[in-house]
Length: 83
Image (cartoon, rainbow, N blue to C red; front, side):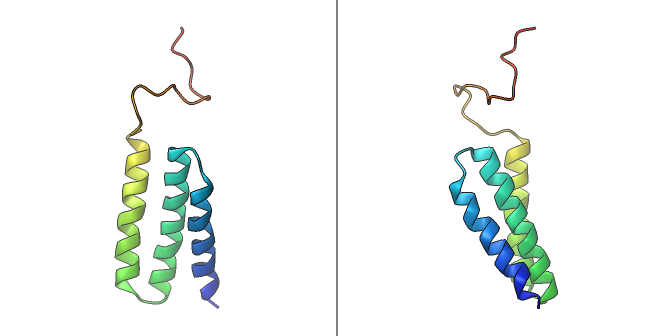
């Protein structure tokens, strides 16, 4: 019954490879890692929980820090700085 959580986590993680935007990729990978944490907790597997907490933390942290190439143009949803 709980296997569906693992299958959904697998599908979400695999779909992240279709992302061209690095920030979106990290958000999807963080979501997948969160699902793996839930799955790991249900099956009482500390390695699954800890590994995916680390992955989710790095994915969220790197997204929040906005790690991107400073010479890259801003994303479409950001203003051009005119104001």
